[in-house]
Image (cartoon, rainbow, N blue to C red):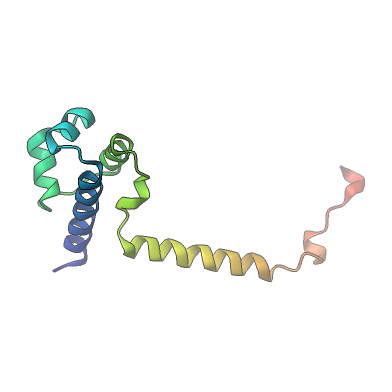
Length: 106
């Protein structure tokens, strides 16, 4: 299975878990999101990709954060980016003359 197929399947499974947890029927989700029933069923079956707009409205209707639909591979990348950013900021020497502010010109 390709990475793309894994992402599609992971997102569909996450939407299904949130839908099951809500107790809302698929038909109701379709009606409330405006996603045609056939399209919703196809995507929930992993035979199509949800776009960000669809995931956002699904999350709103189900009362969950859109991030719950994010595949782990993306969360791991974001976490790594956040760690790298924090480490870079921590390495900045705040006493560095390059960062000094000339308060006389302010």
